[in-house]
Length: 220
Image (tube, rainbow, N blue to C red; front, side, top):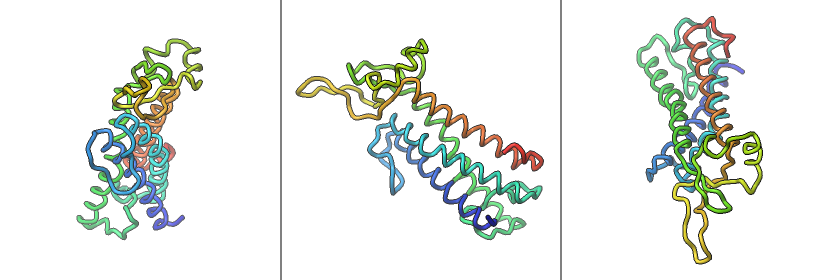
């Protein structure tokens, strides 16, 4: 894949990941504003974190891998020339405006959106899940309701499924039920989400090493 094609693929993947992460972040804040197109406006603030991390993390890993490939192919000592250029524009690296475009665009569509994953995982662990059978609330995470290996493996069965949602229970004519939420599996859900976030930030550190120290190519 030549340089132009590589930067175009990187742009599509990175913008897709940024879009999903930013929209999930906006939803978790409870703001009545989201970017146009597919979004998480049907999800509540806490369940939006699950969608945001699960959908964007694979794209972020792909984006960071492509960044490594680009950096390894362009072994200049200038960091700015090792960064992919959004939209594959022909940039003069000796020009101040060109360098500013690369730095600012990389910051806005790549680095800062990745950091929003920290906010998403923090928001998730401050949520509450409710057991489907009796609407019993539990804290989201691995403590308090999972003490043994049997608890962990048993939590994957349907009768142990919880729903993570913002406002919990609601009274109906036939009794009490849960508000709409997303299925939450104690043990599985927090483990998978945390693993995705850790993988993204390990890949980010590896990519930064390649960008800052050209001899660190093998770290990708």
